[in-house]
Each structure stands twice: as structure tokens, then as C-alpha cells.
Length: 253
Ligand code: NAD
Image (cartoon, rainbow, N blue to C red):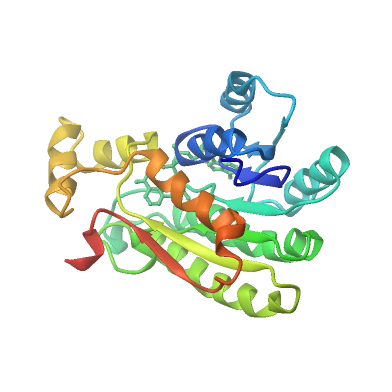
């Protein structure tokens, strides 16, 4: 369908999971891609697997200002502009009650999940083309609380505040800024969370999550990528400042 024909798209957290699924889908839809991730080996493998001259990549830590400026510059040098920014990299941190949560890990989760979004608003959005689209991956944990996930929940709620503010600040150039809110998705992130919750048998934790989802199953990464595609495309040019839930009904409970 070529919904992103010739659009220049940056995807962070592109080496795995949701970001990788988006890279595959966006490429099929005609985009030129800058893939960004902290994991060099996995990023190289993902970029190579796409087998396209329309794909470039940059190893970067999204929580570091110098790295953000570096992958922005590489995108401008390679493709000349940025039309779509899929701000997707994130970490889960630990599953612990707040009283037991290590301060260093709280700081890390806030840096990778929230400060990174602010750094993007500061450096990338001003350089985007007019009429561009920014999609921030928050979570259902950006809209409701989850016991044991205080740092993650705080970081993902925080992205909603930045999203709404950026939507206002860039509205004069019709750059739209929206957030997406997945429930559990079959990626390595959920495998790590399940292991934290029930180290002896991750299937117990998985069953617990599935019971909380009206569809009784996790999403596939492709389900999330499909929503990001709509928001990246010209089918959503009048939509900004919105939260999009993609969770099999989990938020309704
Ligand atoms: P994932 O762990 O499979 O992939 C995340 C990617 O981000 C990895 O390739 C990792 O190397 C990269 N990354 C981590 N820290 C980084 C950093 N500092 N700089 C650059 N890259 C970094 O996870 P996923 O499930 O694909 O998660 C993608 C996004 O979706 C995250 O923001 C996550 O919070 C969110 N999310 C995931 C789920 C889920 O159930 N998997 C649910 C809701 C929201």
C-alpha cells in the first residue's frame, strides 16, 4: 500500500520486539529508515536482515544527549530530513514494591523511558519536517498503576505529559505527537518481567497476565506496529495529543 512512501523514519529500540516489527512493516510501506538501538550486535543483525539500501542504523543510548544528537545528525546526513519519529526504546526495570526498589534502578528507568523522550523533544522535533509525526511508546502502565512497577509506571505516565506538551508546542507546524499504550506484548521484555514475577515457571506469570486481558492473550509486536503505522501515515494528519490503547481490552477492567 506504500503508506509511508519516501518518508524518512527514525525508530528507537529498533533491534528487537516492537521496534523491529515496526521496521519490517514501515520498510514494506516505502519508508527510509534510521534504526537506533543501544545493542550493537542485535541492531546490526536487524539492519542486515532487512536487506535494503533504504535502511541505515546508529548505535546510541537514547538517554544520553550526545547520542541523540549523533543519531539525528546521521539521519540528516543520510536522508536529508526526518518525517516520522517512532520514540520506542524502553526498559522495564525491576518488579519490586516501592519500599524495596533500588534508587539506581529508579533513576535508570526514568532516564531511559522518560528523559529520553524529553531529549527527543528538545533535539529532534525542532529539526523535523512540517506535518511530521511523532509516536511515543508508552504503555497501559502509562494510564494505570501496576504493583511492583512503580518506576516503570511513573516513567510511562510521564511520557503522556511530554506528549501533550510537545503536541501544543509543535502544533503551529502541524507536527502531530501521540502516544501508544500497549498491554502485554510477546517480546523479550515480557519474558524478563515474567521471570521476575515467577522465576521458577514463567508460564505462571504469563497465565496471570492473560487472565487480566479480556482477549485472554498477549499482543504480537505486529499489532503494535500496525497502530504506529496509522499514526505515522497521512491517514492521521489531524490527530495530535492523543493516547492510543492497544491492549485486547485490558484497560477496561
Ligand atoms: P524489547 O526489550 O524487546 O526491545 C526494546 C529495545 O530497546 C531493545 O532492542 C533494547 O536494546 C533497546 N534499548 C533499551 N535501552 C535502550 C537505550 N538506553 N537506548 C537505546 N535503545 C535501548 O522491548 P519491547 O517490548 O519491544 O519494548 C518496546 C517499547 O514498548 C518499550 O518502550 C516498552 O516499555 C514498551 N512496551 C512494551 C510492552 C510489552 O509487553 N512488551 C508493553 C507496553 C509497552
